[in-house]
Image (cartoon, rainbow over all chains, first blue to last red; front, top):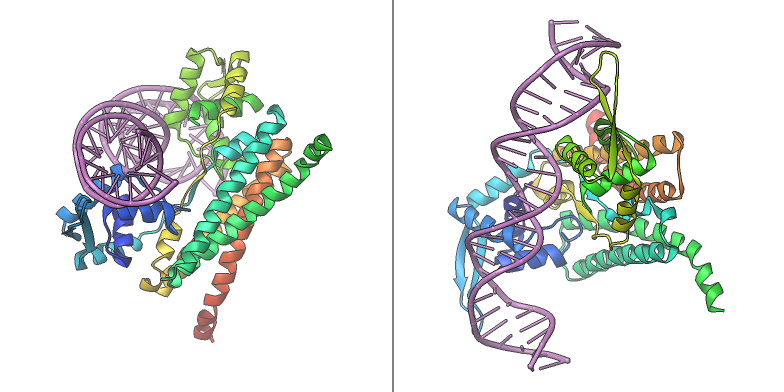
Amino acid sequence: MNIRTLCLGILSFQEASGYEIKKEIEEGMFSHFIDASYGSIYPALSQLNAEGLVTVRAEEQTGRPDKKVYSVTEAGRAALAKGLLVVPARDKYKSEFLFEMLFKNMLPEAHVRLAIEKQLNDLREDLSRMVECRAEGQTNEGSEFIMGYGEAVLTAGAKYLESKLAELQPKIKLAAE
Amino acid sequence: MNIRTLCLGILSFQEASGYEIKKEIEEGMFSHFIDASYGSIYPALSQLNAEGLVTVRAEEQTGRPDKKVYSVTEAGRAALAKGLLVVPARDKYKSEFLFEMLFKNMLPEAHVRLAIEKQLNDLREDLSRMVECRAEGQTNEGSEFIMGYGEAVLTAGAKYLESKLAELQPKIKLAAE
DNA sequence: TGATGCATGTAATCCGTTACATGATTCA
DNA sequence: TGAATCATGTAACGGATTACATGCATCA
């Protein structure tokens, strides 16, 4: 799956500018499992436009640069539907955190604790972003499904880390008393 | 984190050839959160060797091409330790499956069911690989930690999908009767 | 006899990120 | 006054994958 399909997918829910698509990706319900930068989004949109899969409309704004609002065309919807029928690639999960934890016993405990706390924080951030998205509404069957999945997975990870942190904590309390 | 550090890390546990490192990555306990191909592993090993972070030894084999067994040097261990102290990048998770599920209501139900079953299968594969690794032994504190994490997360995902499949199943039974 | 596993390596290519370039507005 | 937000875009660069090249052994 490439960024073109991604843009097509997002636009199929709501017309948007490149800037807004980026925001949706990093703050919306996609943030957990998708990533993209301006450097890939803008060229993708131009390309889609050239192929007739989306249309553009310039929206004037006072004191702001014009906004280029993209909408998906019928051909675009067809392309999306076709793209969705190919068997999806296996999930890719990359974690430097886990790699680092593999060498737990070589590392100072304070560093390990910090790393776990940072990871826990990341997971909680993802979780609360999901809760927000749910609250903001416009949920459909699909978004419910993916948020349920994300919630299940993130919560499980967070729980695990919390229990591991609890095993580490006593040493701090001892030092504080 | 780059592949050089990855190789250094794996070699710090056990000397190995490029081929074996690849196997370890795709079948060992790393498979869940790391990825690398020959095209990146072999050049990385040559480079590490040129920098004196690893040494090579050619192992003759009957009826097989020689094996180049790499071992980490003291300088290599130091480089690894230094590399582990930088703050790890945030986890990256990419899922075409979840993206596709976002459009659940546009897709034929049979397709959705297949996609979920495939995903469930992938998760179970990852899980059983972890169980195998645990059984094979040579676990340390670090590997216990990451396998615990992986197990928690994968199990949660699998449970969620199972419950969703159960909601879908009735229609099949109806058709069968 | 044909697929799979063992074993190493390179070159072309792709996909995307980072950094750069520009500029007004609003909020602290 | 300086940072953050809104807004678009390009060029250079990087990092890794894919495909290619080679070849013997084993198992079904």
